[in-house]
Length: 100
Image (cartoon, rainbow, N blue to C red; front, side, top):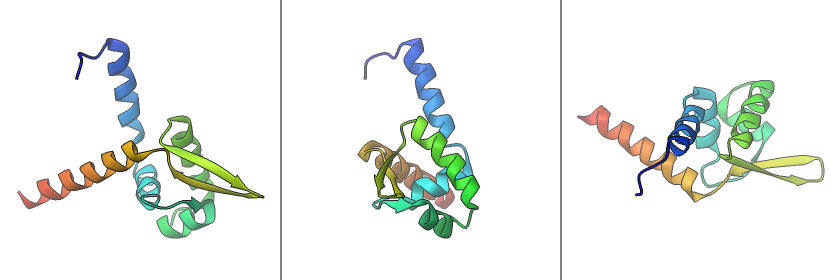
């Protein structure tokens, strides 16, 4: 890895801040490997629809989640495999630390 610039460091810090909210983490984990509409995410996470919509807006703006419209329904998914990898590595790390 090349030495990151100060701008890269700031962008990376902002990127990881988005992961720091439990509701956003629930949403991201719900989207691992599948596309879901807001109602399905609400059911899966047991979080209110308004809270899910608010957090999805943040996730989309941050480039972690993308959306696709089919008629009146909007489906959300992880933006790319990098996000999936980060979530999987974070999960492995947390489980490893709990076992130590």
